[in-house]
Each structure stands twice: as structure tokens, then as C-alpha cells.
Length: 336
Image 1 (cartoon, rainbow, N blue to C red):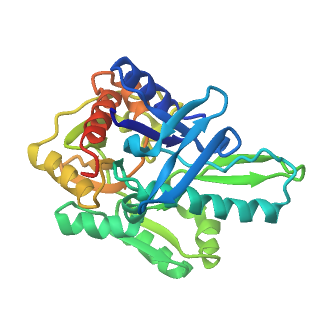
Image 2 (spheres, one colour):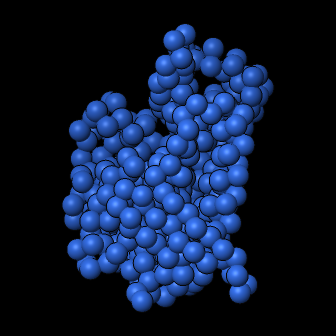
Image 3 (spheres, one colour):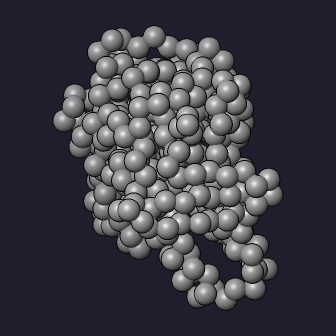
């Protein structure tokens, strides 16, 4: 029986929607677990026998069934909070069930004899931005000087030590979840911020917890470089064409130009080797190209988004590359 692609994500993931459709167009039969509907909408039957876990998972609404021995590759896309049939659970009850379910789910997934895009243990090892900088520098990338400190005076001296200035950056999520007095939540975006004299309150606030600062590097343009197995896709981002994106190109309200870029062979190879050095089969790197033509490493996103770039630059068929890679990995299980 042909091996299948198992996609772990949530019900709002349009990346998975597109890849599922393209897989089916190639006569594949992928199975999707939406974590935000799990276990409420799924049935699980597992038995440890003959030295391994065997069993299946069923989507209750359609009775579609995945036999675990038929999984050839797992695409670990996005996590979400688990969802239970009983919505009256107390907070501590849900916390306990969440921990139990995480153990059950990942005990099973880690036991599968299959390939991954990418294995959670490799993703976990690749997310730490400080370690990313050390590795990038060791492999030959230019990396900006940076500071982590909870001493306001150290931050002031660092920011004033560069003619180009320095920026504050979030190392984890750029979105902070806020809750109002009605219990309603909303997300607030924390952009990369060029530090000026107007940011004295921000500098003082580092006493609460160490924060990350980095020399501001002047840009000719920016690059989003996506590595999928051995393929490298580069998008040139004309971030300096609009005031809203000069410091942080993630302001999607600005209609700046994205276009395909042919990287120098040594930069393309360096990006590929960097991603693969973690054991990853996927990675999305953010780079700066300076007015002098130097390529500067900012960060790598081991589960970074690609669809928004593909929509702006259809020539960069990254969804097609993901589909082909999943099929290849499914047919050669255990090799990645």
C-alpha cells in the first residue's frame, strides 16, 4: 500500500489547504490532523504489540481513516490548543488533559518509521535566535553586533556606539496578546524599532527582563530565502521604497515590490548548508543586502511562512516544491 502524507496543523492554515489540494491533484491521499479540533473530532485507536505501536486515527465527520503503519512523511506545520468534547472543563482539568494528550500524540509520532518536514526535535533545536547568530557567523555569514542586557546604561552605550544606530527586536513572537477588562483578547504587533531619544521609556523598561538589541544595518534591499530540501528560492524585497518598511519589512500595508532573485552560487549554497546543518528539510531565512553588496544574516524560521511570498511572486513555486518534497520523502521513509 502506498505511503501517505500526514499533515499536522490547525484548521486555519491556508498553506496546508493549498498543499493538500495539490497533493490530491497528483493522486496522493494526504491525511490532516487539525490540532484545534483534536481530539474532539477524531477517534484514536492504539495498541503496543510486537514491539511497536499499531493502530489508526479516524476523522469522525467523514470516517476517513489513517493507519499509522502507512505514514510515509509527517509535515509538522502549525500547532494549536487542543479541543475537547466537554467545553465545561476547569482550567486545571484542561491543563492536565493537555499534558496527557501531548505525551500520547508525540509518543506516537516519534515512534513512526517515516520521514519528516521537519522533525520537531530539529525544529526545536533551530529556533533559538542567539544560537542562530553564532552558527551563521561560524559558517561564514556576516552577522550584526548584538546585545542582550537588562542594564539601561549598557543599552544606551550600545545604541550610541554605531553611526547607523541600533534596533530593538523581539526574539520570540512579534505579537503580544493583550486582554481587556472584559476578558477579550487581541494581538499587538511589536515591530523592529530603531532606537531614538524618544525611546527612553523602552530603554528603562529593560530592567524588567533582558532584551535584544542589534546594530542597524543600512539596506539596499532584503531577501527572503526559502530552502526546501535541496531547492533554494529567493525573493528580493524592495523594503527601502516605502517609509513603512524601511526598518521592518513585515508591514504588509505597504505595497512594495517583491521579485525573484538569482543568488550568487556561494550564498545559495551557504543558505542550503545552514538549514541542513540543523537536520531541517525546510527553512526560511531573512537576509539584508547592504548598499555595498554584503549579505547579512538576520534569522532563520524553521517553520516560516512561504505562501505570501509565492502569491506576490508566482514564479517562486514553493508550494509545488513542498508537494514534490513530501511525495519524495513519503516514498523514501526515514531518510529525513
